Amino acid sequence: MTDRFLSHDEVMSAVFSPEEEAAYQRLAPARDLALLVIEHRMVHSLSQRDVARLMGVSQPWIVRLEAAEHLPTIETLQKVAALLGRDIRLAVPAPPKRSRSHPRSVQLSAAGRQPTALATGA
Image (cartoon, rainbow, N blue to C red; front, side, top):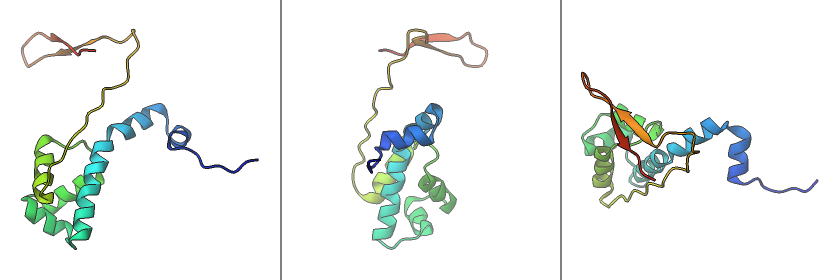
């Protein structure tokens, strides 16, 4: 038996179902942003309460941000950029190609209106 390290992809496949792995990957930007905030706090010896005050938000808001369980909004990105004093650049990769069995449009509707088909593009 040969000792070798497993790749990140091999570990992900062994630990998570495909659906769990997709959810984990979807939240990668949230984890990246949380790490920026945590690093900033540690470097500057700031508490979550200190950061909340600087950002004009509550301390529980900082807890949720650092937990990285939800994708950040544009407003959140702006607040973090202001805290860090630098630009935050966001890269949004295209999702994997869907099989032909999936529709290529999305149905949206507002209260009292008929659904409208919007092309999602390729």
